[in-house]
Structure formats: C-alpha cells, structure tokens
Length: 74
Image 1 (cartoon, rainbow, N blue to C red):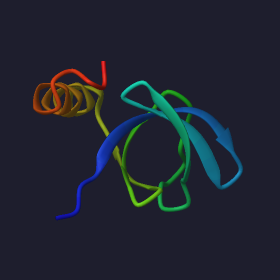
Image 2: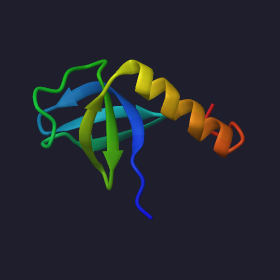
Image 3: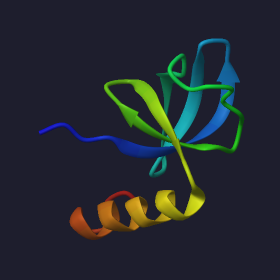
Image 4: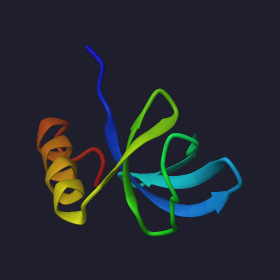
C-alpha cells in the first residue's frame, strides 16, 4: 500500500522545500508542483510533493491521521 501525507510548505529552497508534516519538519522535492509558495498545502509521497491541496482537505487528512495513530502526530 502506498500513502501520501499532507504537509505545509514553510520555506522554498530552489527545487526543494522545507515542509511541516504533522509537526515534523523535513525537506522534500517540489519539482512536480507548479509555482509552489510558502504556506501552501501539499500531498507528499516518497520525498516528493505530488499535488497541491486545499486547507480544508489538509485539515481533514490531518484529523484522520491523528485519529488513526492515537494523536502521536499532535
């Protein structure tokens, strides 16, 4: 099974970005995203941002992960 996780772009660094994934910051490749900006929400899979998403969808996914994993990402 493959899974993509929601993250928020915090800082753009050329072809990569620092993102916050449920409280954990990491660096991901953003070359698949058109015109990424700080503060935008993306789905991340295998170290790459693969799709921009709306805030509402980001919140829904974060809630699902929090419920599934007992709040370990809060």
